[in-house]
Length: 458
Image (tube, rainbow, N blue to C red; front, side, top):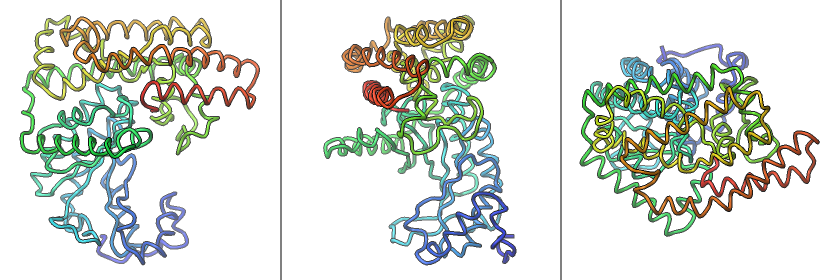
């Protein structure tokens, strides 16, 4: 149907939704200069093939000479599971498959029509927990690669990673080396945002190191991709994902007191007073489901609990260990790059958790009635996760294989402790006596200092 002229999308277009006016308003510019200055048109929260086709249609109606690349972004657990079926519908559409992407205006040697697909780490982790998010992302990429080969459509995966582990961050080499076979074929696209830009590209030397790591990892993954996991590995990961997700959602979404605990224990509400975000912290009024992933992770980072990264992992590992599968888990850790990277990233975050600091915030800010039902469950899961992770890795302590990183954490901890004590007191004063400019300025300073000490902001 996109071959034919479409009527009735002019002055009344804004009735169709918020995207109509903004896209049609681009006609005077986009119709003249083409697509090169604008890059990709990323569709957040893509759920159906019509989401993608609608954007192509709108670009046609806006008179844009060369369509922007339309990149579907699959973010939640359900959307990642549906991504292959959605893309298959698009590839089977004769018009779409014949018009995948416009060639760049600046000549690019070796360019071929291809499909770019973005996968989101932040919302899937907030939706289902870090372990389930990692596994659903892995499976979605596997299926998208298979579909790409089956349909003869070159695929480029675009990884929407944030800075923190809870939003897909971590060492570049480890992240790329743990991708499923075939998902890295000489190219990779990834978001680098926030404080990570300074960390990766702040100096000429750091820029050189960053490009060296990316180039080396991409070459190795392209030329010698990791072997596919065995059936036993996959079945175990599927069980652990289901167990972890159920445990995570039981406390975050199904425990009525959790939202009150979260807002009392962390500075989530006070962070809204600071001009530190590029977008509103909430998509709409509501509970955890309406909170954006960045403030969700940032709030937990400030109190040094990092709950979304590890909660549910201990329960999942314990179920497998109790079923007599510890040796299988250790085999997975030694011989499956994906599982090894998943465990080591969780281990690194567990090493950053400070139980004493977290309980200080509880004592200062959380009503006593909430500490047992919610706080007690959180600390019990934390102890369980530390125990099970060390049993799987075979080490006696966290980061036993990485003394440099452990030393860095140990050096920073006493410096950040002071800022946490001060922030907890400031939050108590702000909530009891009201916010004033002096308190707010002092609070903002603690936020910045803790974020720098933790090494990421969200």
